[in-house]
Amino acid sequence: MTQRVASKRGRSAAQREAVLRRAAGIRLRFGRLLRAWYRSHHRDLPWRRTRDPYRVLVSELMLQQTQVSRVVLKYGEFLEQFPTLDVLARARPARVMEAWSGLGYYARAKNLHRLARELAATGTPATLPAGAEALRLLPGIGPYTAGAVASFAYEQREALVDTNVARVVRRVVAPALDATRGADGGTIWAVARALLPRTGRATYVHTQALMELGALVCTARVRHCGRCPVRSMCATYEADRS
Ligand code: SF4
Image 1 (tube, helix red, strand yellow):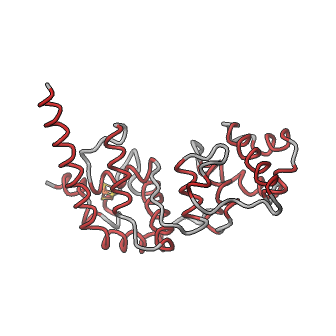
Image 2: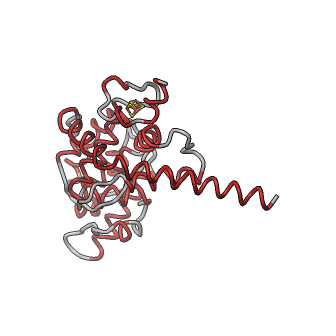
């Protein structure tokens, strides 16, 4: 029994190694093709026009479990009422909840309000910290949101894996992995890190591009491989053709 477990672990480690080698092998070309595609095909979403950390945070919280079309409707309205962390900190809770209505999952709004009040209590103007680790200490900020603010607002070189990114990375590099299994999920994060460009600035475009590819081309329902910029190096596309 112990021998069987050890041999299974050995196989998993070997599989992970092979997947990471494959990611390292395609990194440069994959990144170039992906970013070139993004520049001419991405949607003009309002949160892509800003690098303001507070605005990035609001968009990331709103986008959790909520469709982009609904967030587009509420994002501008919310920021008109609460343009800065300080204004939000001074607002009555009922007003914040009202501005959030239509998006659901109100715990996000409560946490955002709490976060604004905590930061406003430490000095004016209230400012979000730049590092992912410091961001994670704030109310309602998990690893993904912390990484998103660090990358999208502060241009830090952070890998981000949401459902769209996980799907694209898995299909391109390792179709045999199952994103819902803990160990495979860890490997998908490792692959996402192995695919990152060298600089934080390029990482911003790279991550936005992966998300956009997963939302528009390599979707959960349909794979539009015919118009996919990375099909020449995609393991799933190759397997489909053989
Ligand atoms: S080639 Fe097809 S399966 Fe591969 S990433 Fe593109 S759309 Fe997805």
